[in-house]
Length: 131
Image (cartoon, rainbow, N blue to C red; front, side, top):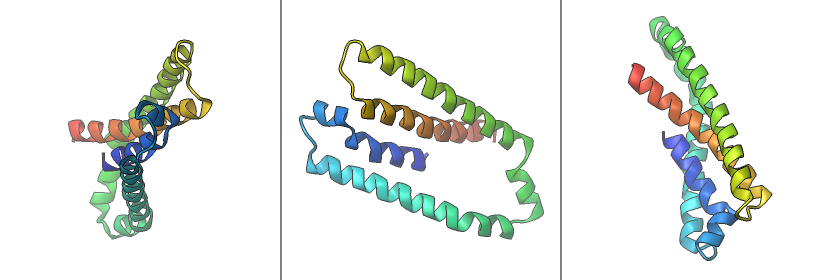
């Protein structure tokens, strides 16, 4: 949840649409965006550097729990949720662009944000509900 939220906090203030709605990029928005980037990058570095060590150190029973059928099913559902979120975002933004001017960069960024954040949130929710 923290990774998805920090990714969104990093991305939203850097959008042209946000700057237009907020009457220009403010120093506060830049600081919040930078904080989101730092939290997301620190979490990513931690996960990439420590995950193998933590998995190797875990007992066989713990490793089996990390790769059981429920976790694999939750990963597949989260991936599917991200796919559908990207399709819905692309369709909605295509329709919105007929009435409001949106830049291609904003559209691509919003679709990317949906593709990154939705699977992370979906996996966290599925793991919590099914745990």
